[in-house]
Length: 289
Image (cartoon, rainbow, N blue to C red; front, side, top):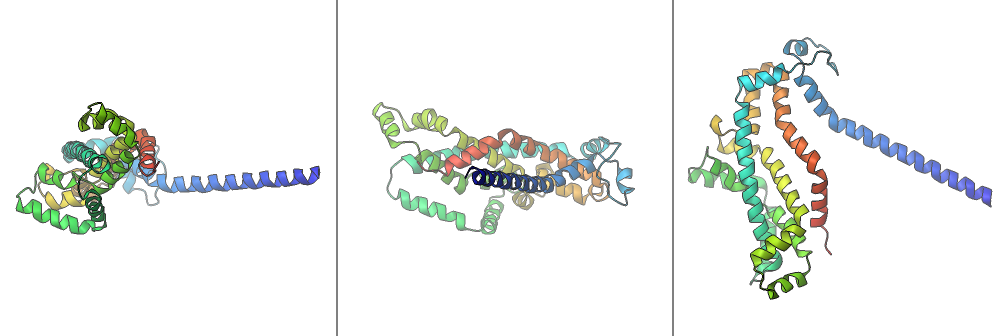
């Protein structure tokens, strides 16, 4: 009996090892597939123009990296202006959106008023409307209000999000009602309860929403392309397109890759710093009880 048990145990351990090896091999292959474009982008950005054009067969390394492309990008195109516009757009939009989202989520989670559930259902149904239809409506509205080529026109359509309000509302709803009633008995106002109790408890979700909105604003492409044709209001998405269409982008691929690296690095760093918070906030927002 002992011999049979040992054999079964050895077979089980062998299967576990094989499964683990296969799992790590597949994960490693997938990670390589995902990370390779970033590696190729950075590699191309540090190759000189002449070295890149002389490669009939692409090389996966370079022995003479250069930062010349980064200097050329900032010198020959207004990339710094595009970055500044994007930072302004991202910060203002995110601050307003978080403020609106917190208030709306609190109202749906804790306040009692007639038709709240029906209104929330209608509100959620807005998620079923295709973005293309919303963009068309927003474009007509912004044009009629003469807000094209302005930061106001860029920001206004992005200050609310049904999904973020739903996510935060579910997180607020997890906080026991007894805590709210006790606070009201003590004479605590709704605003004080929100800022002193709810927000500290639900901080991971608020941080998650903030980070996701920053990423969304930074990567925004279609809307800025529609409402801005003045280079003074171009974001990095418009700027990359302008660089690509210019002589520099068409002829100097390494310089183009350098511009892409400069634009991508802030988001990559942001995600690497806060990725645990993002996962924690999303999981908390979607879990009841």
